[in-house]
Structure formats: structure tokens, C-alpha cells
Image 1: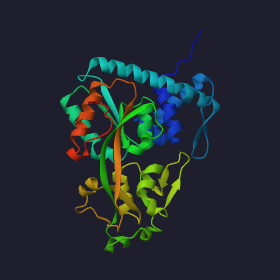
Image 2 (image 1 turned 90 degrees about the vertical axis):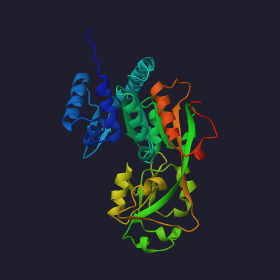
Image 3 (image 1 turned 45 degrees about the horizontal axis):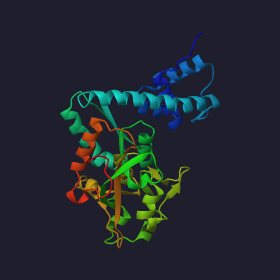
Image 4 (image 1 turned 60 degrees about the horizontal axis):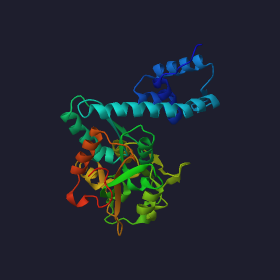
Length: 319
């Protein structure tokens, strides 16, 4: 009897296409050419004898057969991730790998530095950083895609399968280009922002409610998964800066991150009356799952980058 056996790579490609709904974007995430992605998916469709995606005008939608591959494929990918992880646990720090998912600001402030030090100390260790919005970064850990995540502490709500550790609370500021009308004002009030778009990564409702309640009329919209989506939605700090520099958009970022870029940057940090903005970030790992040696070392490195006053007072992922 002949069995059709899609490869793990083909399943990953189908998942990427379903997530990004675009061949070019999915290919970029996977690190392959668009033609290679197209050929691989077409080969799988030919082998299965069904169409996995409806290819409309500029968009992709999974068919009922594609939905089956996605549902069953998730279990396959999780199982393979668990297999690789068990092997890495047995290998220890000298070989194997670690995958970290981080939201935009931790992906600038701490994650790459810690991974760089980890890679330098252990030359055979493979280190991967995935930069996503906070919800998807934590989803990665839930689904076994990543070993650990760093994201806003509000993402812990309703996630009973995860353990978390408060990492740091960092002050934030709003900023705009130096020639922006708001940049010339000595003091800025919340109502002054009406009419100017907001640029940044998607915000959880809790994070926006905590910090941006006074800015409700800034251009935010609610997405289907109940995130607040800025009018200029970006996936990295550098993209946010470029959007701000070339428009009337207003961005926000940790003060520590802005301090690295303010000199000759072309943007101005805004001082707002009677408003203190901050964000609390946390580490996330799967509950009841032994952390790999590389993950334990990563946690220690990230902790060491925090001021002593930021030491967590609640639960810790490791002693």
C-alpha cells in the first residue's frame, strides 16, 4: 500500500502560508525563495490530489482540505519540537539549540544580547530569535515552537498552561519626528494627539487600558483577536522609527531604547503633562516542562541585565 507522507517542512510551509496569507511574506519568514515555496506547496497538493488554498486576488484562504492539514499538522510540529527538545536536554549546553520568541521591545533590549553571549560561550549551540507581537510570542511557547518568550506581563491572563516570571517594569515615552507640530510644544496634553496616527506593534487590551486610556482617540482599532491595532502597525522598533520619521505618526518605546537613538536621530521625545507611561515585561515557559540547560542559562543572562531594583518579587521560573 502506498502512503502519502508530507514532510515536516511542507507542513511548516502550509502553516506559514495560513498565517501570513501571502507567498512572499511566508517565504521571507521561512527563509526560502517564493518560487521554492510555491513549488513545494504545489507538489504537496499534487501528491494529496486536493487544493489546500484558494488563491484569490492577492489573498490566500485555506480550503477544507487545507484546514485538515493545518489541524493535524500542528500536532506533528509540536511532536517534532518535543522530540528535538528531549534530545537537546540530553545533549546539554554544548550542542542543540534554543528558540526565543520576544515582543518588539524585549527583542531590542535584552533577547539578542543574551543570545549573543550564550552563543559566544557555547559555539555549537544554535540560537534562534523570533520577533513577534506579544500575543504571538507567548503563543509560540504554548504551542511548543519556542523554549521561552519575553512579552508584556498582561499576556499571562488566561494562560493556565504557562508559568511566568516578572522581569522588569520600564518607563516608556511617546516620540515624533523633530519637525512634527507637537515637537515644538513645551508641554503636550492628551487631547493634542487627536488626529495624529499611532505607530507601533499591536497592543493587548490590558496594556492599552493601563497606559493609553487618555489617548483613546488616537487611531487605534480592534482586531478580531481583541488586540488594539495602531493605524501604522509595525513589527520592529526600526520600522516604527522609520514610520515616525516619514509621517505625522507618534510612536512609543522604552526610555532605555530611545536613549540609544536620540542623538542625531531626527526624532523628539515628547513630555506629556500628568502622564507616566510604563510597561511590565515577563518571561514565559511551559508549565510542568523541564527547561533545557540553554534556556536556564538564557534566563540567568536576561536577569543579569536588569537593575537590582527590578528583581522579581513573585514566582520565578528557576531559583
